[in-house]
Figure 1 (cartoon, helix red, strand yellow):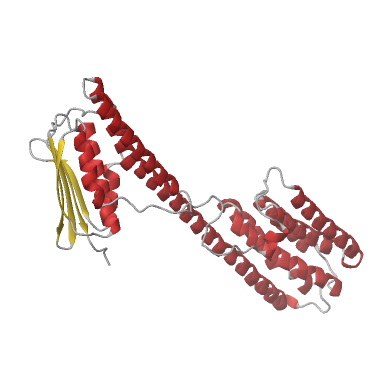
Figure 2: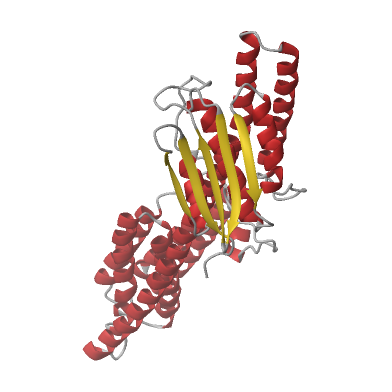
Length: 405
C-alpha cells in the first residue's frame, strides 16, 4: 500500500473534529490562508469586546489575563505551527503576574471570568504539550501548569469571608490536578502522534526498499542481459539474433517497470509475484546469450507464494552476479529441491575469482545478496554465499515451507 504524505488510508471514512472544521488544516504557517485569518480575527475581536464590556465590573486584572489566555488559545487553534511554546509561555506568564498582583474583590462577576480563564488555560496547556518541540514544550508547559494551579488564589484569598490557607491550598490542589490531566492527555496524544509518524516513515522506507529491490532484481537483470547481447554482437556474434533478444529483454524490463509502478497505487489490478514456475524460462533466456550454460534441477512441488517468490529472486540475483563477476564461467548449476519442511535453493558457478565478468562497469552494492538474505531470514530461513572450492561461487538458501509460529 502506498502511504501518502499527510494521512493513512484505512479503508473507512475520514472523521474531522469540530476544531478542524472551524480552523481547517493545511494553511502555511508563513502565509496563513485568508479564511483562517478572518476566523481568528473575528474570534479575537469578540474576546476583546467581551473583555472591554466586563472590565468595569470585574476589573482589568481579571479581564486582561482572561483575554490574553483566550487570544493565545484562538491563535494556537488557528495556526498550530506558529511558535506555540512562545505564545503559551507569554500568556501563562501574564496570568501568573495578574494572579500575584490581584487584590480583590472576588464576587460573581470575577467568578465567571475566572472559570472561563481556567478552562482556556487548561486547554492551552494541553495543546502546547502535544504540539510544541520537546524543550520549549517543557518550559511553556511548566509555566502553563503553574498559571492554572495558582488561579484559585484570586478567589480564595479575596472572597468574603476569605477561604483561609486550607481552602486556598485545596483549590490550588484541585486545579493542579486539572493541569496534570491536561498535560498528561497532551503527552499521551503526543506519543500517539510520534508513533504514527514513525509508522508512516517505516512504511515509506519499506516501500522504497521494495521499489529498489524490484528495480535491482528484475529490471537490472534484463538490462544486464541486453548489455551482454550488445557486447556479443559487437565482437562478431549474430547481430539479428542479438537484436531480437535485446528487444525481448526490453519488453520484459518494461513489464517489470509496469509492475513496480502498480505498487505505488492502491487501486487497479495487480499481477502476482514472480515464482518458481518461471525458472525454466529464465534459465533458457540466460543460456541463449553468450553467458555460461545453465543446468536446472527442480523438484520443489508447490511452495507458498512468498517462498516461491524469494527463491526466484535468489536465482535471478545469482545469475546476474555470474554475468557481472564470474569471469570465464562455463557452467552454472541451479538446484531447487524440497527437503522435508524446507525448500533448498543452490546456485553454483565455476567462474574464476578476482576478475570482472562480462559487465565490467563498477556498480554500487548493497541491494543484491544482502536484500535476498534479508528476505530469506524474514521467512525464518538460512542464507549463505561464498567460494565453491578452488573455483567458482555458490549461493544457497534453506527456506521453511511454513512460517515460524
